[in-house]
Amino acid sequence: MSPKQEMTRVEQHEFYARPENQEPQGPARRRRSRLTEMVPVRFAPETLQGIRDHAEADDRSVSAWIRRAVEHELDRRSRVDMSNNLSNEPRRTGTDDAGRGA
Image (cartoon, rainbow, N blue to C red; front, side, top):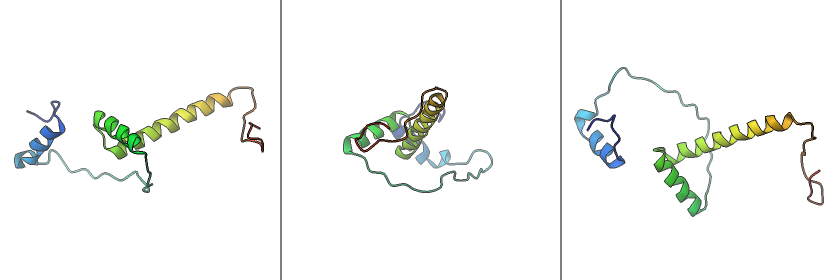
C-alpha cells in the first residue's frame, strides 16, 4: 500500500514503522512556528470527547482542531461585526444596572 492511498492510523503506524519508509523525500524544509504562546483550556468530559471525535474524523490533532474552530469563530464574528456596522441602528455596547441592553 502506498502512503498516497487512504490508510487507517494503525496502517499508517505500521507503514512508517518500517525503516525503508522512513527515508526523507526531497530537500529538508525548516518551518517556523507561527504559534506564540500556550493557553491552557479545560473542557467538560462530554465536550472533550466531542472534540476528540471531530478531530479524529478530520484527521487532525485535538489542538489543531481547536485552533481551527477558534479561527472559524473569529472569522465568523468579524463578518457579523462588519455587517452590523453597515446598519443604521446604534450598536449596544453593554448592559445597564437592570441587566437590560443599554
